[in-house]
Length: 376
Image (cartoon, rainbow, N blue to C red; front, side, top):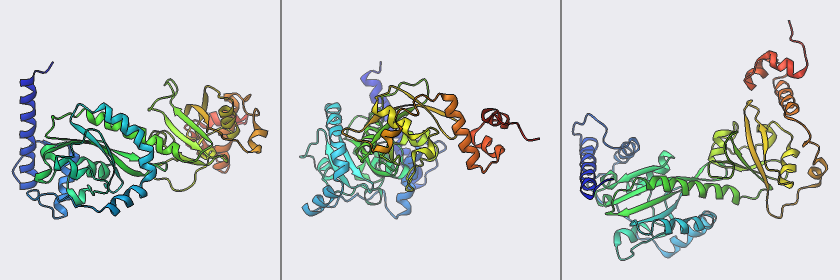
């Protein structure tokens, strides 16, 4: 267990390393080893390229009530979706000296939570709705860096670019919307606080929950939870895909976009479920209506996922799905495999070699599954 004296020494060493890094990267002093995280260096370089000077002070513009109101109105869905999670987060950090800031994709504050001391101008300035905390405006912070890097970050004291922002320590993580694009970020900030890099894990988890909630906030008929076979469904490690009544994908979280080919980040082109999942759509809706515990879903890449399908509250499926219910549930995995292979061959215009390559199987397997003899 670390003693208070050991903690003090560690803190001093950390601050000394940051000071040396600042001299090396911002003044040009020689340094043979990296002393700060790569994303900090990249942010410093971006600030210098914009003509910002580290000895100067970041200016936090005083905003009007009209600006604050306009910001709140323009980000109402994000704020409404995130607020219950921010309230729980505020309770989790109440005794740490840190507070939470939610911004939009431009780094403008849209909501805050946690123990904010409004009598401290350093806290009050950065927690006003509508304040611009982007990298272009206030230099290197967790807010601007997380938005630029599109990944969770931790910054302590002098890792911030401007001299007057070196009082802050902060963790940040991006928040993603239903189409996979970044729509904002979540930040945990302390003032003259003890360094707590473990907060990066906390802010990443909560930002992920907000992202999932944003996907589910879009209108949908069925929600699919996805994971690889052997993993337990029902937690934040699941991929989430939402479908409308016609089988079009209305949203997917970052995990699902990593699992399923064809669901890239920022995907604007409409994607139908049958373009990525190798089973009849009525099987998915049937499972959702019957609260079936588990589905095994083949992908057109040849991989398989386990899934649970949940019907949206008060959702009534159109008659053409009711007519098809039950038709697919008796089909075994063998039939599903055959259907997937037939479709791959059709998409390859009869080219078995190309279909086999797409599925990651041999030509012989394709012929065997289709009950055909290989061409000599």
